[in-house]
Amino acid sequence: MLEVGLGGELDSTNVIRSPALSIITSIQKDHTKILGSTLEEIAKVKSGIMKPNRPVLLGPHCPLDVLRSEATRRRAGPVFTLADFEGRERENRGQGEEKGVWTRHYLGSTAAGGSPLTGKLN
Image (cartoon, rainbow, N blue to C red):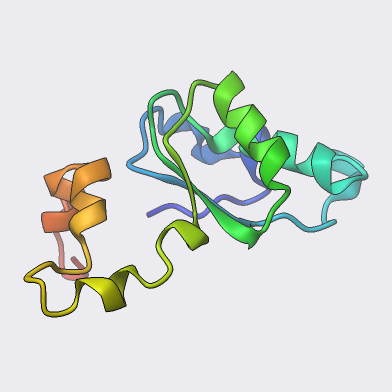
C-alpha cells in the first residue's frame, strides 16, 4: 500500500502503473495554490491516481459526480463507494463467506490471499 503525498497527477506514486486499487478517502481544500481553489478542481487533480481498468474506492467526503466522470474519462473502474459495502459483513455472517470475498473478486487472489511482498512485516 502506498499513500500519496500531494496526490493525483502530481504525485510520485504514479510510477505504479497498475495498482490493485486506487482510493480517494476525502477531498478537502488543501494545497489550493497547487491543486485548485474549489473541491471540484482539487478532485480532478486527485483523480490522477485512477488507472485504466483498475478499481476505485471513493470515501464519503468526495464530489462523487466529478470523480465518477473522471473515472470514466480515465477508463478506470469499477468505481465503488463505502455505501456499496455497508452491511455486507453483517449480511455475510453465517453464510460461509468471509470479509475478503469482494476483494478477491475485484482485485484477484493475491490481494485477498496474501501479499506478493516478503519480509518481517508481511
